[in-house]
Image (tube, rainbow, N blue to C red; front, side, top):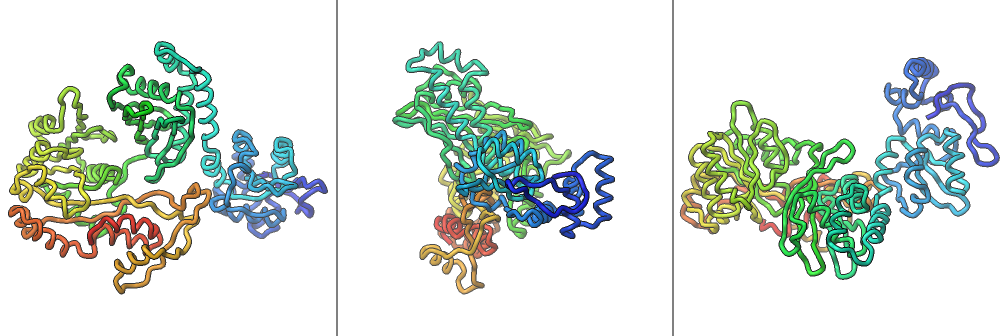
Length: 580
């Protein structure tokens, strides 16, 4: 904001629509948002620091950004806009190039025909007004906005889709109609080559929107590039299918894979540095009808691991889980489909119990996050370094706690259960639908009933649900199916007023922003243990349902619906598959 203070201004605009020079301090005093004494103190502080008056007023807590922008809007008779909820149009926003938008802290909001409505972080900046008028070649009308909302708005609105499409076209031109293998290999080895710049832009865009995966998928006539955000795939760009081979080659080189092998699936990993963040990338390639498809799982090492109290587990369940983690022996299983957050829960558990007096070993495929003070082992099937083989060796390393990334087969499960019986706390995952079915999944794998009964301590089943965008959530009218599920779940309880995000710029029009786990926990007791040892699923299911009544994943998501944090559609998605 402008830094000067002086006599109160009476006129805010010249006949041409250009704002007259105003002094921010006087505007705020005239609006009675600050006192004359506060202004003088801030001006003295400005002389010492050189910072702008507006920034100093905010930093010292004299005024908030919203009040400051609102005060300016009233004084200058211009609209105040909340960028978090404004319905942007991409074609209008991009009338102003990204470099100019960031330089002048400006966003084009609306095309009014005879003029453009432009949001400015500093409506008193006459130089910015003149330069924007010149660049846009249109008359502009200004709007005031909280300045802190501009940077996230730039990141949301100036997605790299056009840049990625342009680089894809450049790569297509670079490759030409026919490129032999030697030329292609040389091309992807050049750091300035279009393929390298294309991949960098793809990664930057994916991290900017919080994507967990990037999918490169050759189709019959095009190459489809999509990103997964909050569990849902979004198309990033469609390109000429000829560039798919160059992208696959480059990724395989980065991951140290065999670039000459295109007939078999391959898996690898590499790291990329984006600004101040290191991203671990897990690469999987798959030969398809139209060429090699690639999927990359992105793991942000700088994001920090969640602690148990932050994963969304209900308080009573969290208390019981912590009690189990305090035991010296037994098996703890976290179950759910791929992408349900099992690894996050296990790492949060390890962070909870990791201590200098404990020896903790993990056996993973792959090692997703590095944990200080913990011995982590990466499985490698190519050299027969399997879960079972590593587990046997782990038991000779005098561990107190063992984490097994996944119990994939009977041998691994049996070794893990034997370790739990012989005085080790074992944490692992299993792919099952819910907590109740888990013990009998182990029996189906061929593990003896007595081992399951004597070692299994607790099963946690989980899913991830999308959370309503807090900026655009509003009361929802349920569909017939949603109302039926809600009525069945509430069963005469307190009425529920569901909410649903209508879609805004903050959530890229999806209505959702972020995800949270929903959980159910089944703790083994004497009766359940006896039912497992007798291989009596009917009795076990009956007893387990009694113990979990009102505490299933469906009930957890219902509570989130009741709080307005997620939608009925998400509740129905979780509840539909749960046998309540």
